[in-house]
Length: 196
Image 1 (tube, rainbow, N blue to C red):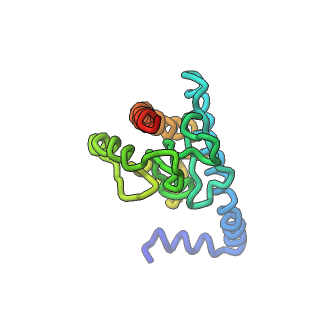
Image 2: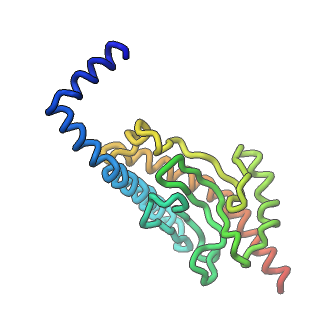
């Protein structure tokens, strides 16, 4: 143990300090969850306000349980849903309580979109923007700036500073959406025309 670690140990093992430390540790999990909920709600609100300024074609799924490893914050056109519970394609963030990633997501169980054609259309663009593509649910994806499994990264989304990080995360989706929308709509339009 180096000198600093010894001083921390000596300080925290004093009875009053130790009892305080236990209280803090006992609250950590709940506070972490609340910080993440608040942050992702800010991202969703930011997205919704900005896309509603453009037009009313957009919807957002903001999952209630951000701790679920498959929880996704999805933005999609109403046209991309067609009466199913979830859209068949959208631009999303996933793993909201970990090292989140974002990209173009697809409900591979849906029969409403020709996935190989969309994958092919997105592949050349994916190479330009340096995104990954090794997941059957994701046409393309990339990790976000912060890993929320790392306690020090949570500092960037604490309530007093979260607005700028929420805007950055919303910007990531919106910039991806601006190009993906054109590609997705073109593939859907071509698929619809071919089926008629």
